[in-house]
Length: 479
Image (tube, rainbow, N blue to C red; front, top):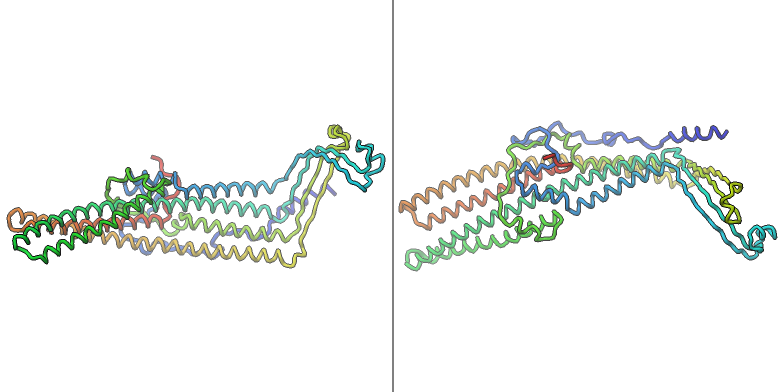
């Protein structure tokens, strides 16, 4: 009979209750379109490089900041710590499938008044001559194993494996957000530096115009109204420089925090103004199906769905009987030397069956609760897919529109450059005044500032597109 028990338990342990995970398609996943509907002429359907997309901006300083952020940002450390927790959780669930063994040594010394532990003979054996005292020594080994009849442990391992996949996607998601945030802050910093330099140049020309006009007013060749008009323009220009300075400092602080340093740590390194980096002429965007496989937040949502599905099996298995086996092997007696006497060997085997069949619906409620969690995860997955598709389409549309804005601003600046050059020629020929020439130069600087702002906005929209495409995670390409 005993020879049939173990094979029977092995066969029973092959039974795993609960639904098997069939992928997000079984939860009504949204089918992606064949291509992006807002794709622009400057985008191509080639699959983008997942890691280090910022190298396409060809800015060594940005490359340096991105590397420092990925190595030193606290949010990366938090995500990696959660990943280590998930790995340990999976090891724990796997270990729970195996027997548990313990070695122990024990000494018992008791005096129990009013209780006869065996009369004079017991007292003699106890060595104390007192029937109310007891001494016992034991050296032993015990092992226990819960037979996984209905897949409670196996579903637990399945859920832990899905949790690990979710943590891995979480690390990648933090990398995507971080790299985009660093690039956005860097572009904003360079934009503010460039606009400050152009604003200061404009203010300097306005001061020269004001000084010349004041001289003309003193000579009686112009009106006080003209003087006040130019003074107002200068004050307005100076006023625009104050918030730009504060914004520049704020982005310096932001970049320092993003790379894991205190505010001000990067001020010296980034003090020299630089131009806003330009996106490449063509941008690889791939297709929506690849986007859904690539974006870490969608992979995390899918792993959450898999985990909640496995938890249904855990809840289902708790409704059925549970069998555990326990065995003990030891040496012992009433004398310390008895623990070395093989004649005092004792063995104990204890199979245990437990079944909480009268729980008044508790287990059924747990199963229903787990199914509700699974349905919630399925809805969240569908929402994540729709949000990702919308993010990509919006980013494509904005980036295309911004490129056209930059083209228009470039044409305006080219026209202002030609006008300033013509005005300079007229001044050299004595056909125009210095004030008119300085005003033309001011208008040229204003057009250049508008172009700089439009260019920064275009690069910012390019960065947002890379984030929407789920780029910026994974190992960096070999140099």
